[in-house]
Amino acid sequence: MMRVVLVDDEAPARAELRYLLEQFPELTVIGECESGAEALRQLPDLNPDVLFMDVHLQDMDGLDVVHSLQHLGFHFSVVFATAYDVHALRAFELNAVDYILKPFSLDRLALTLERLKKRYLGGEEEMAKTIAQLIKQVGLRQRPRKIPATCKGRVTLIDPQDLLYVTAEGRYASLVTEEKVWPTTFSLQEIEERLDPVQFLRTHRAFLVNLDRIKEVIPWFNGTYKIMLDKTGTAEIPVSRTYVKALKERLDF
Picture 1 (cartoon, rainbow, N blue to C red):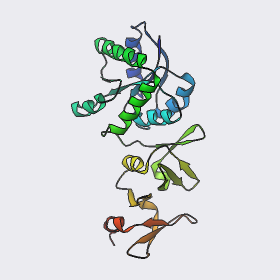
Picture 2: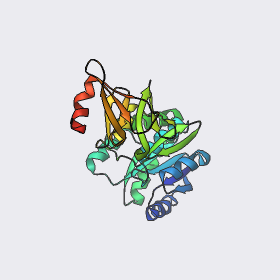
Picture 3: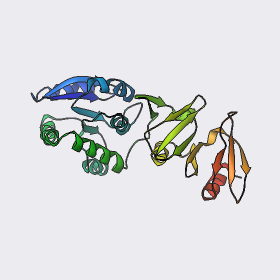
Picture 4: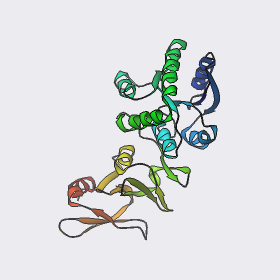
């Protein structure tokens, strides 16, 4: 029997899906989560075989929830529930175990169950590989309201409004707030894709800066600049020649 957890911020949608899944004796629903934050807290303890994940949660992107849990070492089959149009559905179809379009139907879930059985027999390694490919290839996604930072086995959700800048050393990026530096399991490019381009700008191959927190832009050498933020004691943000033009256009100087 496959143990299932539902993640959806709409109670009627969860209730409908639970009722339909209970018609299949091969599945048992062991839990429900109404937000990304709740899923990150509960799923490691629930340890389901299958996760029915809403794509657009109120607090974050369902793909980011899966990404964070995978980097914490938890692997399970994922079925995404979405209201995307046909073009986005094709993108999900490339790698997901399955996607289901709201409103759900019993016949459609029967097909989902068959796909889950095939994947379940394939082993956890294949599940993890598919999830990783999905996260890498899906291009249509909603920018989440918060970004998950993973540290010492725990996930903290960071509000983009609290960011001073984002920096990367090696493969992974860190979020810098007034309080501390938060490591993530995302690359700098992945963080950039999640942030509002009106508010955040790449200034260097290893830096993204919150334009609202810039206090001063100082000419440096060989046509480069450095940025001073409005928070005393923070690092100077480099502006490489590649990004000088974009910065001047955004700040109008």
